[in-house]
Length: 292
Image (cartoon, rainbow, N blue to C red):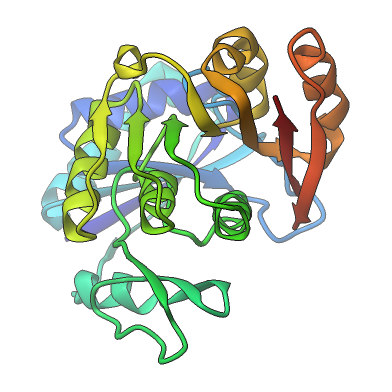
């Protein structure tokens, strides 16, 4: 396998990336050429929404090809295009063979939620102190326990009395729904707009020996003692009336995926329905909760 590397200005990234895909690149990735320097730029976008920019001011584009001839031919064809003006060919290099499965596994170890509650990949043994264990491997869906928002949600679930009914809205990997079931919830519904997330949640629930009702958002019906949504601030604001309508009286609402600076936005969005407060903080993220 061979890697073709190019340097492109921001306004050429989309055209060059599309051209590489048309030239049968196996993959195309874009990164900030000034990363780890004072000129580094941060680009953030909300899920399901376009990013604020297609690339960085100086973007490094890397594409993979099956063989060297294909990579060199792609470079030759790109350099002949008018839109390549201002771009720079860097190199075609061989990619060393690696055991990608073993490499991936080495990057994910057991994650402590509390001293007795752990998220453990299947290739690891649970710590001896673990009483509650979620078996979860990295996959296409968000939620492996390594992100602060996931850990805060799981810590909150572990610290509460048992909830009879739970709705995990935007379930991703299903980790929060599985956590609720592990801590005694008798009826747990997990929903997501992403079919890959629905499938991942079904597989993860089976691997953990818990029963969940999993499906698209319209699978949620009625009211729940706990409604948890670990998404991001923008969709959480839009979903305020819907999420609050699912909370039973009495009941609890738990929201995550919120940066500390976004707290007031969420408080105002939910003010017509409930009073949100900050229950936890970690690495610039917050957990917001409300009681009904």
